[in-house]
Each structure stands twice: as structure tokens, then as C-alpha cells.
Image (cartoon, rainbow, N blue to C red; front, side, top):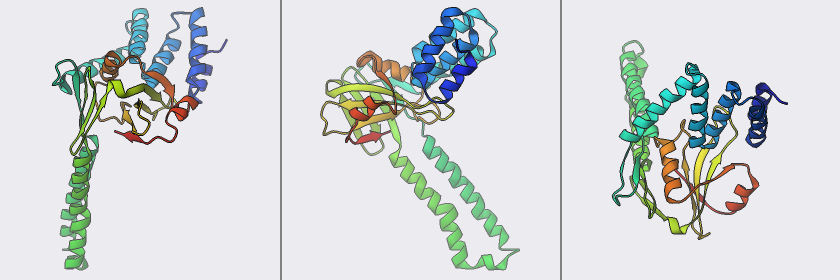
Length: 268
């Protein structure tokens, strides 16, 4: 029988299926093994199985109400509940939700833009000490490099940014600043919830595979660390509500490679 540390090594090597089997065997012998339950909850998180993750943490908190990891999880869950309130609203159809995008990339560009402006002001101050910097061509170069160029990237980021993703009984609606992509559920063959190897920078996304093989598939990033959407467990829940349970699969699974073989995939 493998212990939690041994199973953690299996997780680190990216074999979540084997880890689940080993954890189930361990929990059959000791259902109240908190360390094993915590590892199982984290595996569910990696795989995007948010409902099972909640159920596992509920089991942990029922065993030990003062467990710091469980308390931390439920505090994070409260933040997600608030995100659902602030970053979603009712769909215009009246039977779904719009998940508003958080402008992560644009805010990063704005930060670089502000830093560039500060560097330009500092470079002007340095002309008092270094007379060579007062040359107009050098100052224009600094202006372009530190001020104008960052703002070009800010504008590009703005127009490329996602506004919202809408889900309703009819289908999926992805709206950016310049275009709208609509997918009807009747045109969707399968929805994959694709996870990468467990780890700090694991990947997690929903892939919508269309029946028309000539049309590109659509991939939406739902990794909490990188996604522009908020209230992600609720987003997956809405997909499940209107389309059904997604197929949980690893990004290196042969089934995934076969499904997307030769097909273009648009990522948001």
C-alpha cells in the first residue's frame, strides 16, 4: 500500500489517473485520512472537477473544523462567490449568464506604460548630469521607446481583449472588442475539459469540438492563474447545465490528439 508521499510523487510525474486509484485504495482503509483527502481535492482542482473538489473539502472540514488548509479553501470559495456576483450578469436571452472578462493583459500593458513614462521623466532629469542625453534624436528615441511603444501595445491589447463569454440554452457566445463568435449547442459535437500535468503552472481549458470539421474548435482558458474569466467553477457549471457533463481528459491523451487532428483551434 502506497502512502501519501508516494502518491504525491506519482502526481508530480503527471499521472493523475494512477494517483486517483492509489488514493482510493488508501481511503478505503482510512476514510478520514486528511492528507489523502487534501491531495485528492487538489487533483480535482487540477482536472477542473470543481463540484467534487468542494465535496472533498466539505468532507475534510467535517473531520477537522480547524484545519487551516480547509479554512483557506473556503475563504477562497467565498471570493469566487463574490466574483460570480460582480463578474457575471443575466444573459439577454433570460435563461443564461454572461461571464465578464477581467482585462489581465491590458492591465499588465498599462503597468509597463506607466513605468515607461517614469523612465522617460528620469531620462530627462539625467540630461542635467549627462549633457549627451539632451541630444534631440536621443530624447525622441527615449520618447518612442518608453512612452509611445508601450501605448501601441496597450491599444493592441485593448482591441484583442475579450469582453465576455455568454452561455444560454441556445449556445455559446464569445465577444471581443472587434468580433463575436457564436456556437450553437446543436453544432457542438463534444466538450472536453482538458487538464495538463498537475503542478504550479498546470493548464486547464474547455475545448468545444464542432460537428463541422471544417470549422475551427474553440478553446477557453479556465486556469485560475491565467484565465481572464472569473467565477470559473460557475462557468463550468453553466456549460454542464446547457450541454451536459464535459469529457475530462489530459492534454496528452491520444483521444484528444485524435479529436483535434488536423483541426485549427482558436484560443481565448
